[in-house]
Length: 230
Image (cartoon, rainbow, N blue to C red; front, side, top):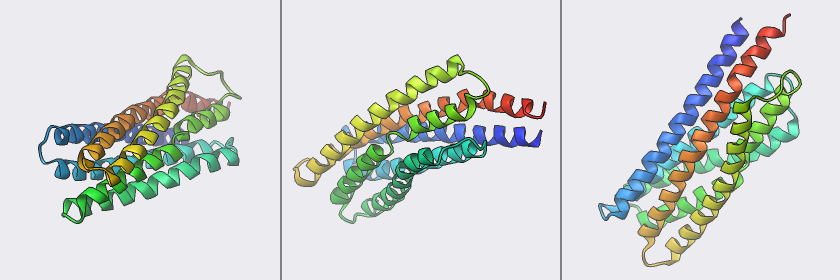
């Protein structure tokens, strides 16, 4: 009974992490829109950079937590963990770096250049971590398919996970291009704000997908644990 409770609490915590991640994406997108309207563009871009960096850290922590939960079932392949781990590591490092760059930009230390660099780093992190959610779905499926077939919710979650991979790839590429243009262009802040808007919307979508994915596997996991002693 305690194992069921522990698994349920872990899944709920991870699901809340996905929700907070989605809220961070909304906040970053709203700040970028406010900046694009002409209200303190540099300040809004710096704050949005900090918020997005924090959202990236939360997303990486949520995915890592769920990976550890799946591994505890004893049916995980090391190759899958390695594939997901590379993207998660990049998200952790870039998220922390983005927060630092955003704080420095907010303090007035080369804000235009630092925000552009952060945008390029964010785009690169999305590219590297684009398959993390999809890989998490696959590993969850492998760990449970021996006992029960996939439910309708799990199938829908799989489609969403596949879609989020493509969205992250496109958004990452767009952010890198906009970041490079911001470094060499004349309207650097506007380009960075546009990139942050794209990134924020992308994290909103992937965070929602991550929460849905985790919640879709909560009930089968609990059922598996309850039936195992019989």
